[in-house]
Length: 162
Image (tube, rainbow, N blue to C red; front, side, top):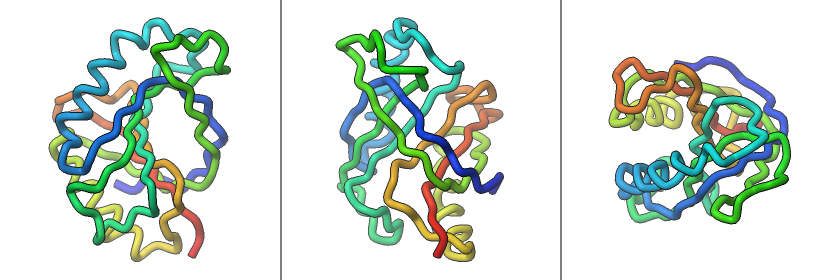
C-alpha cells in the first residue's frame, strides 16, 4: 500500500470545489464530479490527463478526533500550465509543494476507508513523520476506473519529519 515519500513541486490546478462533511462524502463527491466532468473539456493548457481529488481541512486532521459532521472543502481538478483563459465557471487553486507520503489504493471507492485507516492508524504513527497542515489529494491517473474493483489511485498525504 505504501509507495514512496515524494517532495512535490508547486502545482497550478483548475476545477470546482464543494463544501461537505465526512458523513456526506459519498453523495457530495458524486455531485461535484458530475458537475466537473462535462466542463473539463473546456480547460485548455492541461499538463496531462490526470485528475486531482483534493481536500482542504480547516484544521490539522486528527483522525481519532474526526466527527461525521466536520466540514471541509473538496475539489475536482486538473493541472494546468498557467491560469490564463480560466472560464468563469471554474476556479483556480495553487497547491504549494512539499513532502508527501504516497500510497496506492486499489479497489472500489467504498473500500477507501480501509486505506485511510491503514495510513492514519498504522503507517503514520509508526513512521518518522507527522501530518502537515496542507491539502491532501488523490491522483486519478490512467489506472483509475470509477466503480471498478481493479481501479487504482495514488493517495498523497502531506507530512513533515517528527
